[in-house]
Image 1: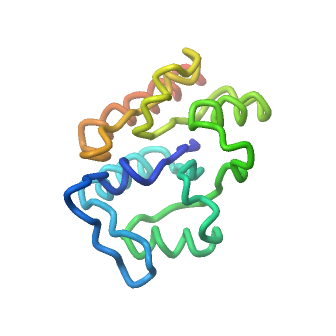
Image 2: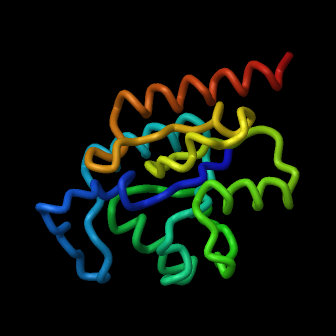
Length: 157
C-alpha cells in the first residue's frame, strides 16, 4: 500500500493562533493524535509513505526517515513526488503524477488540500481528507483502514 501523505494540516494541525513546537531536527512536532492514527494505518497495510507535502524536497529521504522515526512513526519506506517545478496546485500535481505512472490500485491519499475535492472519481475515492486545523484523527484512520480492506477484497476477487 502506498500512502500519499501531506504533512501540514495532516500531521501538524495548521492553527494560525499557535505556532507548532519545533524539535531538535528543525522540523515541527507531529500531533500525537496524528502519530497514533498514521501508525494504525501503516500497521494495517505495511504502507510505504510517498510524501506530497510542499516540504518534500527540503530534506533528503534519509532525513525524512529520521524525522518520522524521531516522532515514533515506523515507516517501511519513504519516497516522494518529484519537485514541483511547474508550481502546480496539489490536485494537478497528483493528477500529473498518476497519469505519468499509470497507477491503478493499492494507494490512499491523505491530505487537507481542498483542491483535491475536484480530483477525478478514481482518485477522489482514495482520498482521506483531513481538516487542516485538526489533522489526522482516529475516525479518519478508521476510514482509511476501511478503504484499505475494501481494496484488498477487490484484488482478491
